[in-house]
Image (cartoon, rainbow, N blue to C red; front, side, top):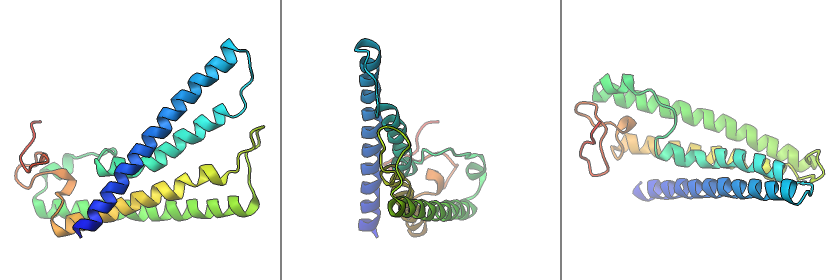
Length: 183
């Protein structure tokens, strides 16, 4: 189990690096677009579309990393006041619901990707990018986020992970070494 969880955590970290690279690339392309348009008075063909697709892809592909860090929007008022048993049950329920959502969205994204490939869909711009390229980010990113949910559920069930990252005692967050962090 430790190997599986470590592998999934490594994949999630890789997704975070890819997402950061996509955002950095989008920033560079925006800078290039500004120079082309306003200083060189040249037209831009692909830049706006690339930036849009890169930022959307970064969102989908970066989602497993955000889940790994527990960075998604989270209201922790209820888990803080629950005892350890109900807190674990709530964490399992939330993770299972998140996994179910990921499975539905990944399947829908996969179907959309299939249709784009089979139909030869392209953007309606001069660049005419094949749409399977940007559509690939949805099933891959959300599918890997679902895998991160599986690793989280396994970690909760085997005691390798604390529910909501909270210590069993007084509901204060536990740090990496098992101690408590200051609030």
